[in-house]
Image (cartoon, rainbow, N blue to C red; front, side, top):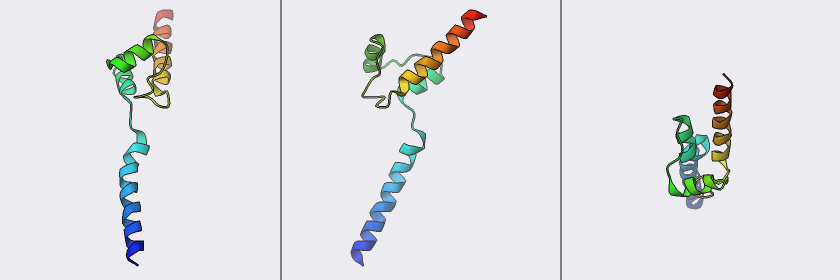
Amino acid sequence: MKLIKTLTALAFALALLAGPAIAGAETCCEKAAKEGKECKRKCCVSAHKEGKSCEKCNPNKEDQKSLKKKGEKKEEKEKK
């Protein structure tokens, strides 16, 4: 019985900790893109110069998605 209570408490604690992480934690590059800026971190700047994604900050290449959106907005402004 003590083992079941311990496992239940552990599962509850993990659920509380994992909730915000799954819900939508933004990367540094996504935050900068929302503000209309480039990310200022050294690792991201060097990766973006090479046309790559910073593996440390954006393991799922979220920054490339935000850079594409930003590029599309610039093209639309230039057309007008």
